[in-house]
Image (tube, rainbow, N blue to C red; front, side):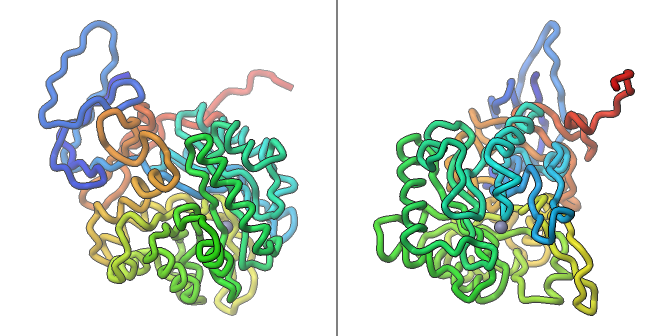
Length: 402
Ligand code: ZN
């Protein structure tokens, strides 16, 4: 399969001007002006007119409950797993799956199976080993073995701290986890990052701060998430980012509602504050927490039920950075492309450059809506419609199976 995009405004994520992009097989072969190429015989070439479109790297979602999560309100509040189009229709071409609160009925075998399924359907997938719980429930019985021997495992997470749903890990337990993950990563050439779920207790980032101050473990071994959950937590995380750590915002499709009932920090405002405080444009990411559970309350504060997190928030947050806070698109894009790819050491991801994977989103210049999504050279979404659907999303006829 060959895809040739003509005359799109290319963000690598740095702006590179109007260019053509040639994708051969699963990789980008060239990003140049007026590419001249001739193909003969039965080779199928899809040529896309990129006029009026922005070409940006496919999104890397570093925290998504791909096989569902939730359950905190009883079994009926377990959330459903992600279908392929929950990701591709929102521009996501690489996803890192995680478990969440329930590490009993959802385990590593099931998470890996789900990740393999999505990969077979066309996108790129990785997972963190473990769940909220400590000791960490691994597949092989050892954190280091999971990271070193299972291709898809790139780190551990989401380990919960400062949360009433956590295992209340002690400092010693916490440091042991981080050091095992770090060494496992070193020995296998992977990131060995620990994705930390931050709850809303006043202990904030205490365990992480103590670890970087009292041990040799560097800031970059952590990817703390939900950093914008409340103002106090965000301030501590902002300090962490100033010192060289990378912090992960959780996108929020319903932020107008949440801003009205709590002090959650709007992603675009948080990124603006980081940049103004001198934090590097490389040191923040945004993930979706997709398929995670979201308790919903009415205007009187009464519990109404559990909603499901949506991966659509990534594109929405990029758009808000540009339209509400005037952050340059090439900086906003880093949060969902090159930054997560770098901290997680995902090879050939997060940039539109020759030899990188052909993971590209085309956005309409006028409103940033999604036009085309290409994952490893395969067109998944065309004119906003899914052309590749997941196994259970296809319209089929019943064939008499009993
Ligand atoms: Zn979480």
